[in-house]
Length: 330
Ligand code: SD4
Image (cartoon, rainbow, N blue to C red):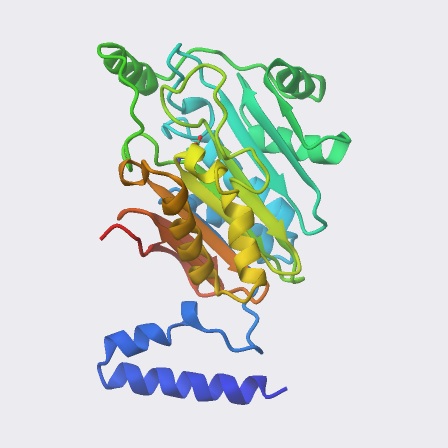
């Protein structure tokens, strides 16, 4: 009711503001910030970092042809997992301090079903193994050799354990000093988290990573942990995280973002409040980067990071674009 009229009112206001050359006000009323109760923007997909653009393209193919969000978020991040030049997702990722690439991923759908794998080695698509954990087992999380065996038993192929030339070069360089200090925005910036709202109004999310470069062998971050790296509540919204996982684990970051939206926060405010919580619980916050992304049931999105430099990609029926997230440490 009133949808068309309020849309026309908003469009007229936007055009008028644009014409008057008031960029700040125009921005405040921009589509991303729209929160009209009658505006549900769907389908829509958002994902972390530059590589989100290619992942969104694959997700959008599914979403724009009336497909379901669960398929979109799986197929979307598989593009990033396939990209061997990516140093933080999939088998092209930087290794742990002992030279092993170990992968973490999780997925969640609109029914609250979820699955994850952690410390998985030599399997190309951890996100699809995570989906299989969700769909074929009574469990949520399977790790290490058990996860690998589960994958092989279910038709996945065992890939080479050799590092890509680029990862090997970086690892050899790191071995010269073997110093481990998670650096914001440099060696740890490529996890892909994706959340989508499909044409049927359902939400799903996915997250996949090779984790922090040169981590201790056996270390698992936030990315495969439901509620930390990613979370979906189909009544409210969905969120995902990127950055130094330990800081996100300490505050159940993605769950917190969804709960803040439940209490009425916009996606952007929820992400901002989660970063503020993270700052209050992590004394080392100045040395790390973390970014949150959120999408609510109305298709509104938001993002917020600890430091400058976090960007994300959004695809909807107007196109697929990159946005810079606002951040705390200015
Ligand atoms: C981790 N959260 O393993 C991941 C790393 C990451 O962007 O997000 N990088 O802690």
